[in-house]
Length: 482
Image (cartoon, rainbow, N blue to C red; front, side, top):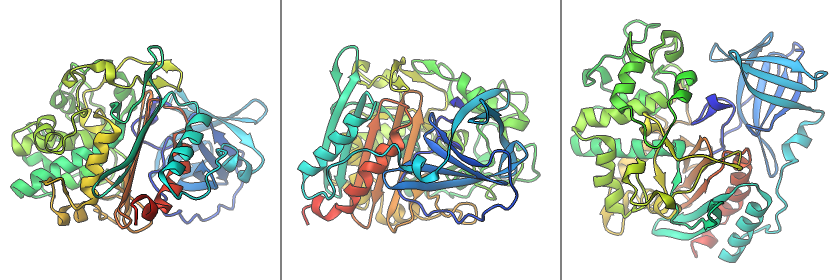
């Protein structure tokens, strides 16, 4: 399911408990009706008539994630065909096609309840009363998973409450994971792109709704719409209408840092006649702000805008104004910036096959590497209103603004790059790339944050998060010593 890396339709890791969608049950039958489990994506498809429900299995059942439309054998999202379905092996296997490639295969199950709970972990800790219980809970979950290495941190407004490492950063060398082991963050990176932009906004006071074309050295023109105006807010909320062309994106992964400059790639992807330009695959047919569709290339363009606005590239700005002041010494955007790359957790495809450390030209959308302890300092700063240990990176009112729905008509759960939860104060972001899966979540009302980093892209990540996040956030007062 390569096209689903760094966020898309099926491979979605639950950040926190979002509001269940209200589904209107379909009336007409379909040959694909039934319950299907996609092991590679670790999601359940519940197909009934013209409705495809996508759910995430967890400790206590399935959580609704989204719904798609089915017409014949074609699956639609926002009116666009994203998959084609085919039955195989006496109708026991559902083959999910994207174009001419098989995106995934799903197995048929008789019972929705069965498939929603069959992967639940056997956990002895029912209620967390101490940090010892936390360690027992995490150890039990990790030991029952197939993840090579994992780092976890629990955070309060004053800093890291507890952190730990499990398994191996490098299996062959026997290098253990510690809370200071850097992991590829994948799309969790976007939170730092957004934070850096808001820090620059506090300094310079530019308009978040200004047209990006006013500052870009090239012009972005959606060939399917007339008179559209793409703003920084559209980029930060996945409502720009810029789409991820996964045939191009997948080809951009290279060992080491990418030799292609961010600006060169964006110009070649977004301007007619460019090396990676495709009018149909790179652009949606709706106006900016109308529809939310997860966009890595939009996030990359937002990161590029930092240089256009301030004259300083995003990576240099973050080093000087964010990572350095907060003491995030194991956090860098590029492999070349690490004094010793051997300390970085090796990514493992499906939790088994070691991959080379890699990069891509759109690094602001997913290439940041950081440790659980470093991320803990960042989340503590957010929970503490933008200040930690005498260092202020943002004003409290700016954080409040970031954690509000930016364009509610398009997505009421989308903040300034942060995904918002159903419960007051919830926000977070997940990430997935070859060989890695990550998640961060906070509840500002509870004053607690959780960080989970793994060096496997296996399907277990959403279940691991579900098993840990519920008990930990429910025990916020105990963990904070209140």
